[in-house]
Amino acid sequence: MNYSWNIGAIIYAFIVCTLAISSNAQSDDEDNEEAEVFRNEDGTSKPVPFFRIYENNDKNNGLPCVLVSMDVDITIEPKRQQNKKTTVSLPMAAHAKGNCGHGFDSRITISWSSFHLSWHFQKSRVSDAWYVDVIELSFNTSDKLLGDLYSEAPSKEFTPNSIVSIRTDDPLTLFLTPIGRSYSCSYPAEVKILDSKKVSRVTFQLRNVRIQPFASMTQRQFGDAFRCPSEAGRRDDTVPFAVGMTLAVVVVGTVGGYAGYRYFKIKKIEYDTME
Image (cartoon, rainbow, N blue to C red; front, side):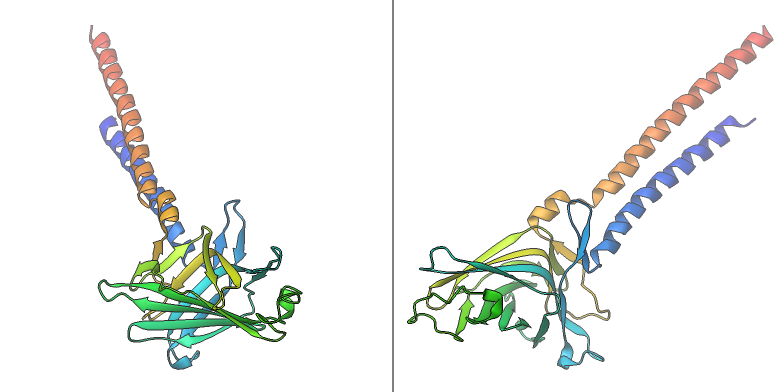
């Protein structure tokens, strides 16, 4: 019997199987990246508010140019209110409008109730990248989502049914990402700003963020993910391949050792028989 051929076939089959497993693990992760559902640390998953802005505002025929998916909790805290504060969450039923910005700037405004949350994007003039430049929030002080948050505010600062407008004072360079790719981060991030009168503090708690402005694509989905540092540190796409190769080496060593043992044992038997 040709033992060397059988052992070689076994080794080849094991290597193919282990590399196939590692390749499948990597492709499964890539498929999950395109989903509009984020998976939590405990293995559960949840839908995340998702918005698209289309070229020429034509949802039926236009291609998406701005894509935003995120969980947002907005904590509003008026000063001089004895630490009173209220948190409002971005609902799934919110709607969006904006502009594609074929030059250097783009914008999306997400609206619900009296709230309007705007994100302004800029293209870098020194590198092939985009970033968030300005975040704005406006709302009515009498909005039912705020309860009695502003009911006891000093009248000279806020009146019933007044509009509070809040935006970042200095230009941001938030979520710097290569053009053509989407910024992706499931880890929480905070952005804090004050209103123009500096009497209300607003904290944005962001989770499960995926954003892509200046998109030019043939399919209505995000481009390749550019991960935030905290997420990129925990995720390494070379791991499945390395694990597969390690398994292959172990298998080759084990099968090779067994082959050597069988070879010398058979030779010894043949020699003893001849004697």
